[in-house]
Length: 202
Image (cartoon, rainbow, N blue to C red; front, side, top):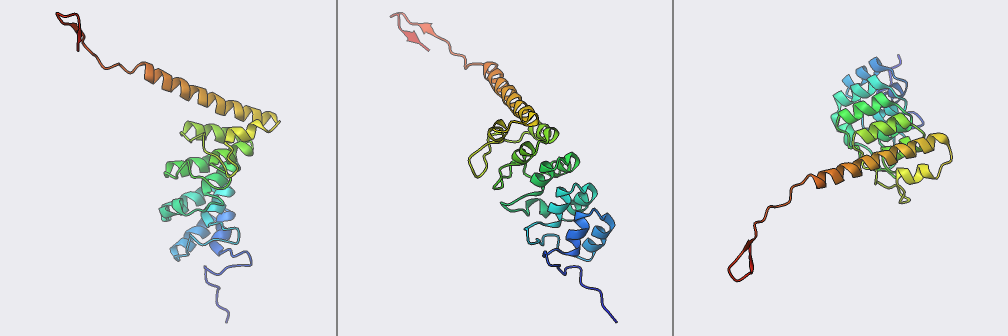
């Protein structure tokens, strides 16, 4: 009589059943595996967790399920990649929103830079706008010292130029907001009196 392999058993890519179910969006299988206490932090040979794969392929319900079961997955990422970056790269707006709403660090930096770098480089203008609206730091640099704006300004495509304009427009709005705030800040009041000798007394 054959016995079923344990849920934590890995294939040749070091992937567990949970990795495969997460990648292909099999929500009910993911639910069962989590109930069997399958470790959701295990990584395959590309150092990806099940949450990474669900984010990469836009499996929204699986992302929600994994986060609800294990909120600590938000801090379980490497310098190679993070769920927010993977979702941003592929334009999965709903997944990006869920990760941000779950309080994932929007400014987390991998070797490729921030999630803004990923969205900008892969031409996902709607995700770029979402990240800008959410307050991502546009000055973060990648491992080559380049910002997301630096990267898209070097690319000739119309989409890249559109994204460059989005980032530049965001920077202008921020700068204008800071100047307006400075101008509206009242100066400390001082009273100056002239004494009988003609000197100033504050």
